Image (cartoon, rainbow, N blue to C red):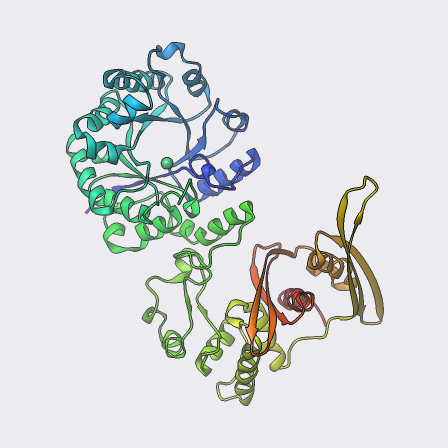
Amino acid sequence: MAKERLYLFDTTLRDGAQTNGVDFTLADKLAIAGLLDGLGIDYVEGGYPGANPADTELFAVDRNLKTTFTAFGMTRRPGRSASNDPGLAALLDAQADAICFVAKSWDYHVKVALETTEEENLASIRDSVRAAKAKGREVLLDCEHFFDGYKANPEYALACAKAAYDEGARWVVLCDTNGGALPHEVERIVGEVCKVIPGDHVGIHAHNDTEQAVANSLAAVRAGARQIQGTLNGLGERCGNANLVSLIPTLKLKKEFAQAFDIGVSDAALKKLTHVSHALDERLNRAPDRHAPYVGGSAFATKAGIHASAIMKDPATYEHVKPETVGNKRKVLVSEQAGRSNVLAELERIGLKVDKDDPRIGRLLEIVKEREGLGYAYEAADASFELLARRTLGTVPNYFDVTQFDVNVEQRNNAKGERVTVTMAVVKVRVGADNMISAAEGNGPVNALDLALRKDLGKYQRYIDGLKLTDYRVRILNSGTAAVTRVLIESEDEAGEHWTTIGVSPNIIDASFQALMDSIIYKLVKSGAPA
Ligand SMILES: [Zn+2]
């Protein structure tokens, strides 16, 4: 049976830009559009030309993308003609392959928000679609509040959708704008719409306010819709939009969808999904969600000992898909409950060849348990575990020694009489026969210490030039009588590889220092730096 084509429409740059704390620059938008294009997304909605300078510029520059680059905007204002609406004119002039209009489809909103008649709203939809088609653009219509509108007045909601379709819009997109619809409702209503408008002209735009945006999108496809709108990592206003990073592998790897549909994302592009998801977080300066389906650091991580031994025999026993299909990795966690099999599995992953009866494995397990009793959590710190394993098995060179460090935090008045806090760190390092002293100012003690430590490592400096810290987390633990501080540091190198290291101490600077040292030494080991 021939597969049907299902189209993906990304709105990370438009709806995703509504996310709290997200503010894309022009460079961000171009870079993200490039990632989406590389993935094989059919439509990339760039923004709202005419509404803000960055979006106007985005539509003016040469983008060189294969995707259908789409501009978003409103239908003509009520009471005006299409030729006499400056907002519509800016949208029509933008260099876009397609235009996605948004229009009301709930009679209540037409009356209260738009303050116009139902017939004038329909005329506005028809006129706007016609004007964009005359400009040679592919046209989409986002029917705002479609599901709420349909529940209140199905005839009118359908009339809005039908007006756009009859006028030649390529897609009529049903929006769950408030995000409150449930999958069985979406499936029923989309089914009703597809009796009037062919499903290969119907799209779904779901919001995640009941955490079912992905489920609602799949329900719409089951009912006949053939376009899904969503965002990378589920970015979007409030609780976000449908997450394309979860939808794409589901559509490609789950039988019901994979057998029925083709999407623009190839098997090779699917392998880049984890990278694309993390690259977006990187741009937003956020730590990736460890528990994200398919692409999270924990998505294919197993903790308990019995599972680990089964996974080593056959990974399919505890995995719903193969992690490498989405560019992720299998991970067996080493933890307090760890058995020998976990440690063996982890050593195999690291690439350390040890006989399974080697007595040093028992020793390593003892050290892990003892240190976890002190507050270390190796399941969250893969790189520190690897170093511990390599040290216990005797293979980490002593690259350099930090003979002394000093961190000074001073609060005082500056020349303008303002109260300022100044932090400085001085680090003495011995590399072979060379003694080095480095000093750095930072925006806090850990930052200053990190900068000083990485300023000059002599012959090792070139190995750590691309190293940077991407996340720093602190927790106070109450173990027994005294509180201790646990620091987790996430680092990244020039190749985009991430790792996490740990430090534990009653003193936060000391705990941070341990984690920083582990990160640097891990990078030297990984880069094959000579002893
Ligand atoms: Zn939306």
